[in-house]
Length: 88
Image (cartoon, rainbow, N blue to C red; front, side, top):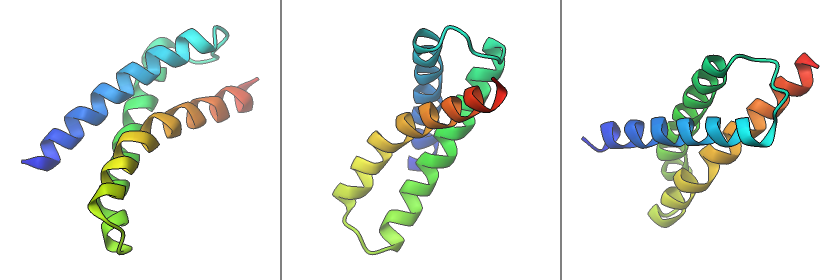
C-alpha cells in the first residue's frame, strides 16, 4: 500500500515541478504535455530509487524520507534543464 502512496505522491510532485519549470523557463523546446510526462517519469524513478536504494545502503529511515522529499523535485528540474540545454 505504501508503494501506491509513494507513486501517487511522485505523480503530484512531477506535475507541480513541470508547472514550476514552465514558470522558470519560458522558452522550453518541448510541448507542455512532454514537459509534464518527463517530469512525472523522472519524479517516479527518482522517488522509487530513493525509497529502495537508501535503506539498502544502510542509511536510516529519516534519511530515506528526506531523500524522497528533496531529491525528486531537484532531479526533475535538472533533467528538464539538461533537455532544454541539449535542444537549444
